[in-house]
Length: 137
Image (cartoon, one colour):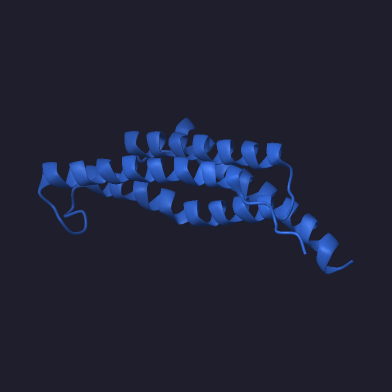
């Protein structure tokens, strides 16, 4: 039995996601140092907003990376894994920018969640088709 291809494309986007995680975490830490609030948000709206920027990112990152890796391992088109990975990174950057600016609905937040959910939808749908061909053949 041949070894499945290693998910190098997904690994590339995992590395970018890791870097984005460090940037967003650093913004939260910086805000905590400025406000001298170590736990929770202490009622500080800007700290609460930055914590949500990071939290929202973290809520989607693991799922998307698993989907990208499985898609690549299961033989999904390399171009699609690249497109979805790029879509996710751009979406999370747009969402982080939009949410860090204001709590109101704005173009950054809207584009960010749209790109993120589109990434999950396309990756999941494609993975289902690829796997169904093997499982139900």
